Image: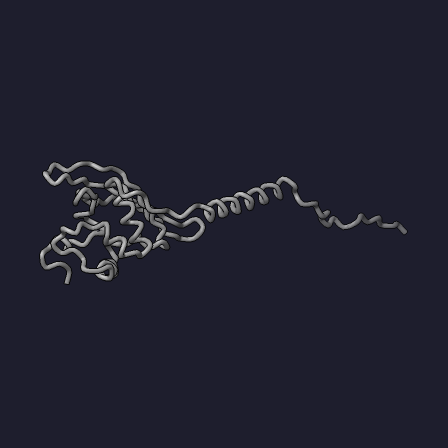
Length: 182
């Protein structure tokens, strides 16, 4: 009788984990954790001295973002024909015209940057402060989008203090009207 010699089955030999792959994964996790820590430790924006038209605009937008409508009202020119009677008037305007005030809530992911400040050719000494708005729309890990636009606020001196007198966004047109906002 001929004996058949069999070889052990060719089952895969268990491999040890690839150290290089483990290093890459660990490094990626470390980078994500470091980025999250850096974001969490960033100081919250703070108000700037009310000495320049640019600072007035930044402070006004920050007050609106923080829903500090009393402070936002302080940055508006009291010489406006329809000057808001109270902080709640500004809050109502922001709620009713949320399309114009979009991006001001902290959850929206919008950032504001003063892009320029140019004197207008008028006798009032008005400065047009342009603001670049970048809005981020989440869409999952790889599906977000970004939209950028520019708006302006006009700032003029009232009793040696800069105040907002007009604008195309974050400013209610009815504040320039004698009848005010109704």
